[in-house]
Length: 361
Length: 266
Image (cartoon, rainbow over all chains, first blue to last red; front, side):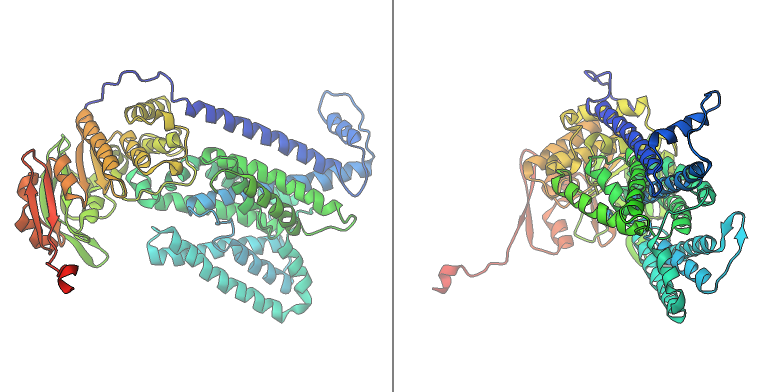
C-alpha cells in the first residue's frame, strides 16, 4: 500500500485527546482521595466512641521508627484493628468489586441495565447458602466456612450452567442467548431455593439475613478469603478495558477489527463471575452498587472503559464504605441491612444526578 | 497486490444458500459496486469478504486465501463499513476513530504514538478535527457517516468494504460521502467493494458494477453495460426504462402501469 503524503498535520494529537486524558486522571486522583477519606471516616466512627486523634496516634505508633506510644487501650486497639478496619476494608473490596463487575458486564453485554448478577450469580449463591443453612452444614476448608464455600460454588455453578445453555443455542456468538440462558438458570435455582425455604421455615430468618447482605466481620478472615479472587478478577477486567470499548461496536465490527469476541466475552464473564461470587460468598447479596455506580461515572461523561472501569471501582468502594457507615450508625447499637441503605441513599442520589445530567445515559 | 478474486464462491446463512457460485475479480485500486434487489445476497457477499461468515469456493486477496489469513493481518488489510454501524452511546469522535487502530495494538496493549498520529491524519483528511471532541451520537447523519468511514480508514486497510454507506442521507450528503470515498480511494490506492440500492449514484462513482440477483452474479461490467433497460427490468421484475445521459450519467425511470386519471372518471 502506498502511504498518503500528508502535509499540514499537527505534530501532536488533536486538541481533544490530551485534554480528556487530563480530566480522567484528575477524576481518578480525586476518587482515590475520596476513598481514603471515607475509609478513615469508617475507621473513626462506630458504636464505641474512640477519639479520631487517638486512632491516628495509634496508626502512627505502628510505623517502624516513629517513637510514639499508642494512646489506645488494648480493647480499643482490638475494636479498631479487628472490627472496624477489616469491616471498612471488606466494604471497600466488595463495593469496588461489584461496581467494577457491573461496569464490565454493561460493556460486554452492551446493555446499561446489566448488573453483576446478570447470569445467575445471585440465584446460585442464594441456593448454595440456603443449602448450607437448612442442612446446618459446617466445616472450614482453607479458612473458608461452609456457608461462603457453598454460596461461592453455587454462584460459579449457576454461571457455568447459564453459559452452557447460552452456548448450546448461539455457539457463544451472541450475548443475548447467554442472558436468556442466565434467566432460565436463575429461575430454576430460585425455585429450588424457595422450595428448600418452604420446607425449613424455622431457618427463614437466617436465610433472609444472609440475603440482605452485610459487611459485618470479626477479624480479617473474610477479607483474606475474598482477596485472591478479587485480585484475579480485578487484573483480568482492568486489562480488558480497551477491548471492552471495541466490543461496544458490536460483535461483527469487533471481529472485522481482529478481535476474538467469544474469547474476550468468556474471559470477562469468567473474571466477573469469580469476583462477584467471592463478594457474595462473604457478604451476601448487596444489590444496586453494580448498577448505579458505573452509571454515575458515565453521567460524568466518562465513556472509555480505560477510565470507566477504575473510576467505577474506586467510587463503588467509597460508596459501600459510606453506606456501611450509615447502616451501623443511624439505628446504633443495632444495624440496618446494608442492601437497604445502598438503595435508600443510592436511588434518590442517582435520580438527582440523572435529572441534572446533560449527558446521554 | 491486493486485488480480490472470487472463484465459485458460495455462502450460506444457516441452511439457506444465499450466494451461489459467484466468480469475479476486483483489480487492485478499482471500485466495484454490488447492486441488486433486496435479499439478493449483496450484504452476505460483503460479510463473506470481511470473513464474518465462512464461504465455500475460494476468495483470495492478492493471491492469498482469505480463509487462511491470520485474523489480525486480515484486519489490517480489510475494513468494513456496516450498514447502520452501531455507535456506542456517548463515545467521542476521536475515541471512536481510535478503535480502528485495534488490529495494530496488542491484546493488553494501549494506543501508541503511531496510532495517535494515524488518527490525527485521518481526522484531518476527513475534515473532522473540529468534531474530535464531540459525541458521535450527537452528529448529523452526514457527519456521522464520515466518522464511521474515518474509523475504517484508521485501520489503514488496502481493501474497503462499504455496505449501503449513504442510505438515510440526502442527495447532497450522499454525494459528499461518496466523493470523500473516491478521494481516499485514489489517494490510498484502495480497492473498494460497496453495495447500494441507488443505481444512479452507483453508476456515477463505481468503476464497475456487479448485479447480483437471487444469490447469483448475473451481470458485471462498466456501468453503462450493466444498467440496461432489459437487464434491470428482468432482475428487478418491474417495468422501468434506463436513460443514459450524454455526459455519462444514468437515470432509471420507473414506469407505472397507466392508471385512469382522476379527470377521466368525472
